[in-house]
Each structure stands twice: as C-alpha cells, then as structure tokens.
Length: 118
Image (cartoon, rainbow, N blue to C red; front, side):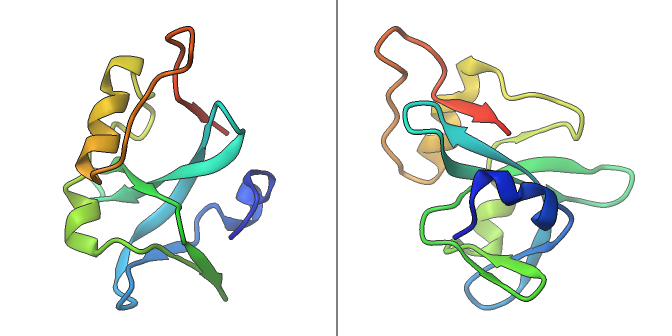
C-alpha cells in the first residue's frame, strides 16, 4: 500500500480491478479523519465529455509498476457514488459511499466528517 504523501507520484496512474481490467485513473486520496490513513481513492471514469470521480476503498489495495490494484471489480466501482471532477464530497453523502461497498460508517465523535481529501 502507498502512503497518502505518495499521491503526487501515483496520481494519473491506472487503477485496475483484481482481474487487471482498467477502471480509470487515480485522481486523489481521501484519508480517514480518525487515523489520517488512506481509506478511499477517487478514480476518474467516463467519456471525455462526461468525466466524474468515483470512490473506491483502498483496503488491501496493492501497487505495481504504473498501476494501483483494488479489490473491487470494475462494474462495482463504476456504479459507486460520484462527484464532478472539480467537485467535493458533501458530508451528507459520506454514508452512501460506505454503504455502496457494505462498509460500516460512523462519523467522528463530535459528528465531524469521516473523510478528508489529501
């Protein structure tokens, strides 16, 4: 796995599913605000005139020469909650991102956001 600080080196690399099928291109990393560890990546998908950023968990992701391999299939990732390429994930939509991948969601103890973009 890579560290959040390494995003500059990996941004723009392919993101692939377990079968090696390209999902899209790595755009950014969201960290868990409780641990400051990488938790989700945003991946640019879609046609040039209709690009969007989808969220994919980084749990058990691995890196290879020029790619990041995630454990979720391309079809699941492409149906994940998305934002515009210049958008930001609203706090109210965080639970939907977790629910899409059947992951537990709990905001911070004071109700603060769970994800922060790096």
